[in-house]
Image (cartoon, rainbow, N blue to C red; front, side):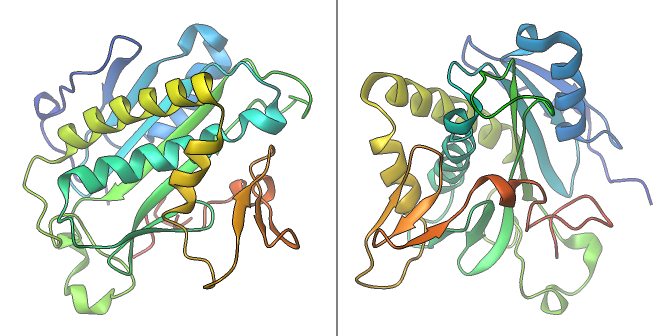
Length: 247
């Protein structure tokens, strides 16, 4: 069945100057389109934010131009996750917990809401600066087509959680602003503050010290390592059959 769509005129985000929006109708996939564009145009595509006008999920992706080797530039994924969480948190009920399941799943009040996805050039060596990166985000807007929400208790939707109708555009705008702030802070003061903001959403055992190393891995008590790179190959939140968030 084709993905439900809404009028493209409802997707008219006002973005910071560093971005330009490209709105596509279903069945386009924002991640796939952003990667295709990046492979074609390279760093010239940086700042392009693709949004697919769907009624069931908020599907968007942005092309980035890194300035560090891939091994450390991969931390841009964590910056994207922080920007995504900040966008949702700014528009949602403040008392609801918003957490990450390492490394890519966004959880709202204990239920899966969506997550992030990452791509880099296939042939890029770890010690080489990639010509481009892609961060993609997807959130469930509505599960109306999935029937009784009680049948899918592991996931939630923005409309179920009290977010207003038409929230898609404000979320995209907020994500873009927060991503700019995240990268500006990283450039000016290093990754430490951004790492702390990511870790603030990551549940770890009580009494365990957590940090993020130069490669983006989480280190617990300087003993246990949660790797980042291998887990980005296949997003844990994504249903391969539908191409959207697991219900």
